[in-house]
Image (cartoon, rainbow, N blue to C red):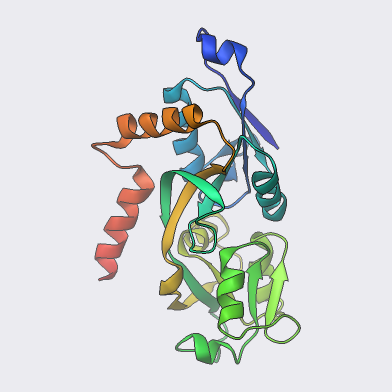
Length: 247
């Protein structure tokens, strides 16, 4: 799935090829509307940035492992929404922050017996995660292993189905993803938050291959400062309000 954006009349854009961006379908950050168009919290910020910077762009929505592979191997390629972790820090040019993400363990509401209090107790259950996510290494570091207590799926929307079929006991996902899915699909398996993975509470970024033109990165960073110096992106404001309410 591809999304294009152009501003005409600027010599830089008229001569230059569109900037390549890769992402995945990951509601509410990146999702498709009824017309099949890409939108979402992060998509909206990225589109505003490129418009403000006067840069043409092309967005491809791909399976996450493929998107990461392209961003790792192809110079001048941008990727979003990428969770900033210690392991990834030196691999990318971290252009601008997009949205914060809180990650938690969820179980089916109909299964009250699935109630671990922390990560050590969660090892006694089967946990589902999406392939290629930072969550995977986090679980490995805490003693989870595939074929034992860890199931990896290709796309995040499959996780809810795995819970409904009792193929997994818990899933480790973004809280915003669960809230958005509950609104869109109220008749599906009801999810219950079990506990938060506070170590994974990080910011999602627009990042780029290390071999990306410095001028392009600087134009985007300047555009970000112009757009959000006084009023942060809506998803950042919403997260602050929610965190205050939770406390």
